[in-house]
Length: 398
Image 1 (cartoon, rainbow, N blue to C red):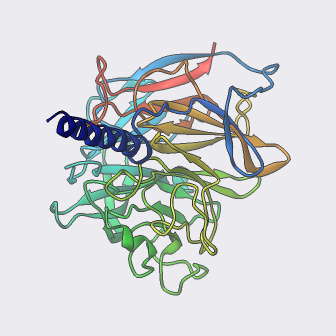
Image 2 (image 1 turned 180 degrees about the vertical axis):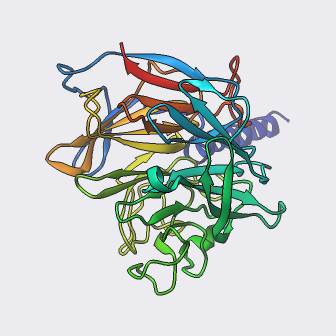
């Protein structure tokens, strides 16, 4: 009897140890979130507080600009005083001279069963003249969700001339994309998720798990890498942020890594996106490498769920000029990535701005005056609600 009991205890101990190893390595449990680190030439991270030059730093204050929003997803400035915010439930909200207007600019019918809904926004490069805006939204039934990108005219208090530019992008209640960014050549980039069907990320006939590039009228640019296809790059899992370094012509991207059901937890990515390149998903993930596939420039395990991205160009905060920011959902904060001034494609360090403790953050943008705006996402079903969430915040000089 005693031998039998010891045998059972031994088996239980082995199961407990195995379960702990699985939880640590696969689920990412018990692992502390990276707060700061220095990145070496091989893109390996040493956790530490980066030694940065603070001599030119301008102190900032953090203030609430708007509150009681519902999962603000994307922020765009139409002027120095007017900010447009997409809410995931389909409302397009106006913040005019720092005041959130009661009536939305528009309300779209969207699916919002999970992560999908009204998502990315972009202004036409000639918005001052044509008042045209662009939005990505999800529609359809739960088992047949798609994203589409539309254009419309902003008339100040209402919209008109709504047109569908591209439709039928695979979507789901998870991994629905969908960030928008105009390039200097006036083509529009669209990030798309793999809609939890990871194999489509490698299928060039599918629009899922890609970064797409189209003209403003929805047509396919003649210089796209694949004939008669809007696909610009592929092998993406769920890209959530894009940022453009205009001086060096570098396109930066954030992307969510696996979530246990499709691979080990963690593996969030910071990438430089180039035409026709294959970013590996699901053939590689985390720090894995394979010939012909692009591994991330920077990888985060445990996951921080990077979302909106900003390449900061203003001199208002000289300590941030020509540096990258990304909003973190699971990581609950703003992360700053330091770029090597001698090599603009190299990240030398990262820090989490620990003085910003407002929960999940989904988007971050630069205002026309150089101040920095960001939006929380605590009402998305995964965050801890604070009073009057969700909110738009601003970093401005003290």
